[in-house]
Image 1 (tube, rainbow, N blue to C red):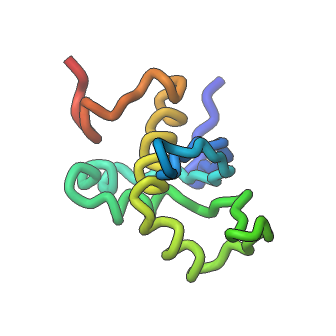
Image 2: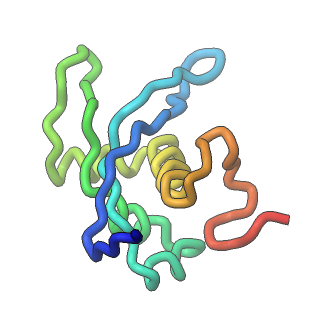
Length: 117
């Protein structure tokens, strides 16, 4: 049986590759996603801000530079979701979690909304 929910939400652990000396530091956070409306997906190729705004309900497991937990609010949302490495990881994880693909199977080369060859 298929359950249809207009307010579908789920939590996904997202791996973020944070730029660091001599490479990247692999870190994780928990993102609560919500299903994006079709009209948002249609604009995803040209408006990543609209997509991120629509699909990210919240992010947990965030800490400051001293390791203290950060509380999710509108200011932290703006700060975190403007970081390019977070944006890429969140978008990649959203589409992987919706499609059922494992994160290692999606490299983003097909682009948002385009089929891979």
